[in-house]
Length: 143
Length: 139
Figure (cartoon, each protein chain N blue to C red):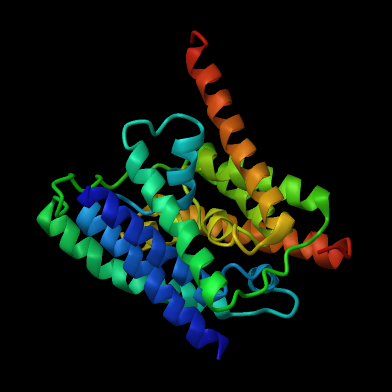
């Protein structure tokens, strides 16, 4: 129960932060990506503000090795730069620029984003399921 | 004053990620939390994922209901919404992370994968804006 309560609380703080910071305003996000146009630097402050508490949190987490509820702290991934990481990120950047929504803000604005937000969210879920299916098929195929 | 709201909201985003890490021992990644629910790969902690997403959708809904909601200014171009959504959904799962997971939680851990993914999506986002907004006159 504690685990669920703190997950709900973290989600609620995350959503409030996304709403407050302007991350659910697609024109601000597109303005941030428009480096060669009327560039809007707000997102640099959002990212900077978000990284600060996490710099501290990682130091504490890695020293303790375990969370308060006993889950081990996830190990740092191997520094592997592969086509999946870079290709997936490139595809994500392309879609992010087209609409100005990424997964967190797409969920945070579900209640006030109108049909546009709902359609984007639905397409995003289809993309996620599609990737899952493709992955399963690849893994099932004999080498 | 946009930058101050951005910074304050950013502190909340980072605070939420810190709480989720230190108390639950989880990395706060929006695409991973949702993706694991919808593609069936996250059955082990289904309830925890659902609770997080309930808070993420619910808190802004409550604020929008009792106070005010910001304009999302999203496009009404159905083609852009569908292509953009598909690319964001597929791409973030393929890269195993988005702005929250790679950007916030990865960079702050000095993870090479997080930093590289962030540079890649910023570069291709900027390139897309350049081509589609300034080249094709859309967006």
